[in-house]
Amino acid sequence: MSLKYKIRYLREYLKFKAVGGKVDKLFPIYSDYREQAGSATGHYFHQDLLVAGYIAQRNPRRHVDIGSRIDGFVAHVASFRPIEIIDVRELKDTGYSNITFKRMDLMNSASVEASLSDSISCLHAIEHFGLGRYGDPLSPSGHITGFKNILKMLKPDGILYISFPIAHVDQVLFNAHRLFKPESILAWQSEVEIELLSFSFVDDAGDLHKEVPVNTVPSDIQYGCGIYTFRRL
Image (cartoon, rainbow, N blue to C red; front, top):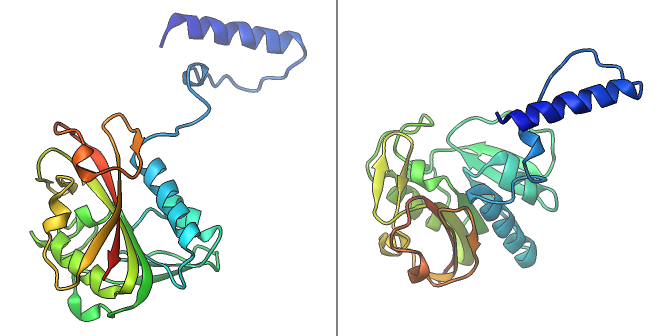
């Protein structure tokens, strides 16, 4: 830590004491001297706000989420409407009536209800399917199976919001996650027909590029986030 911050801390401590402040214990935090008001960048910040905004605009009859971040995206959506959560792991009661939960393995086709909802999200989750990290069964094609089953759950004309890490080449980083080329999802085979309505991405610097063509992603991207909106035909 820079000496100038330690000197600043000492000066402010002495000034605080001089004006009558009572200090019970020293607990120096230097990092906030140079930080901004907060973090407004990165995969989760952008995808969670962007997709929550899409859902607010569309106002679907029913919205089901699969595996997205509870204290980010789910909380955003639950602040203005009901949201149903599906995850392979358990979740204790949140205490909020707008959030309901069901435990389910989306790689198990037998447990999937067809045409369940007119709106589904799966943000930063599909890349984990089949890698065992969250107690899910091991499957090299788990992401494909999961994607097919999610599409089955979507009603005709329903909307799917899905995101995952993108890079210049498909990769498996066992057991953390997979990385996909931005266009790879367009080749994932399914009997359910879909069309891409919009694509946005977060680049390596954590900045959002909203509603752009898929081919505008830099060819040397290392760890970005692709955010897709699909409609079931």
